[in-house]
Image (cartoon, rainbow, N blue to C red; front, side):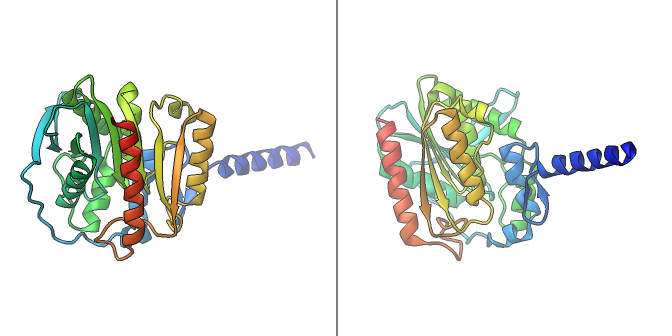
Length: 285
């Protein structure tokens, strides 16, 4: 009898341990992984990959923007696409790429923010160290290979490039949405505001307590990956951390703000962008 109870105890314990694991789409396990690792696991999901058509060919031409390099604290160099304000300012926006890399589509978004915000320096960071995907297979590979330690080093190098008095807002889409949040955490007291477009949020409440900026979360309610469960948990975690989060929900799908995506929604994209500009203008004065 005692032996039977012992076996039952271990069965229940094993089940309880298994129940603590979070799974997402086709058994992808998210237990004990960072926000970046959670998002990188989507590269294993065929549905996620197929929801990202290869980007349309585009070459960005600019009279203002240029590529720059800067040193990073891990002894390497990083690069980015920078647009400097016509008048000296400590206001900065760091722009984070989708899973494709720092392509010309992201450079265009960076320049759009630069023109529409005014009196701000904009730096789009190359988080893949020169790698740019034109096919979803390569994008998934690069995202899976990405290391957050290197990402943090790139952001720290960018902060040094911007200067110790820089006030930094961050924005990113998809993979870059999560990187926008990680960069805001890394920026510490220099952080001015964080915008996330359908990206994986930080789930560690203790880390969220260190945030020094408000967050605007652009969430498409039909997103299968950054879904309601992820969003509700993020809102609960931010509340527990005592931090301000504003969520703008749209009846749209993942990557709805990407003109290259068949599920692009022009109306919702314009509205989300309006809120993004207002968010940054209120915090970068």
